[in-house]
Length: 296
Ligand SMILES: [Zn+2]
Image 1 (cartoon, rainbow, N blue to C red):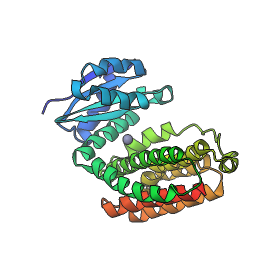
Image 2 (image 1 turned 90 degrees about the vertical axis):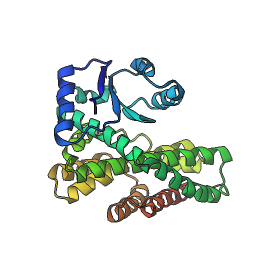
Image 3 (image 1 turned 45 degrees about the vertical axis):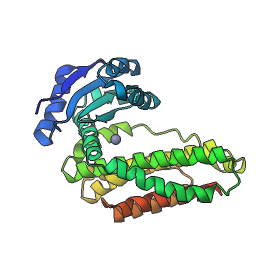
């Protein structure tokens, strides 16, 4: 096994990055398939990453990155590339070693689970549930392309949320929860602007699919943090308990009907979390069902 090559394209302190990486070797394991770990702090730096990508995969991977320029891991045949791409709000990761180790552990675990086939399973299972729910939604009083847009976005977000839940719960179970929590605590430090709360009911009256989608995706994405770290809190971790309280206070949508329906799905997930298709398919089904309820 050779150690991955570091490619530092943004403004980072190399010694700091090496010390964050050392934590992986000490506390976790570096998968032998990782060829490169790249560090960016501006998205145009990805142009240099494109040069090391395999030609055949280049356009697909670039499209994926530019659609949402955040940290990600790339798996291609027998190697992986970890891209750490920081926005201005994530600059704490340049000096908080524990958080940076946490983010690296998180991305590395994504590559492990992807290589085990978990992501493909999630996508396939989700598509089956998507088809069923879509056939119900299509009878509703919306434009066909709006429903398609809504459901494909909810499907993508659902896949993302499940991937996040699996990665973070696995890290928590392996005793590395403190690292990923450190990253999430900083990421969710600022209170978010509840731009859509007032308008959601009006949006429904006006058939504004965009507003419905925004509110729905907001709550859905929040589950990626709420579910794993509630599990961590249930194991007795105090920091995780406080983090969940902070999310409930500052990030929960203050419209009772939305958050109470999501709370039901969160509780289902906490009680029934498992590595089985049954858990995942029920998760998808509940989300799509709620989406339809939301549209009525
Ligand atoms: Zn992730």
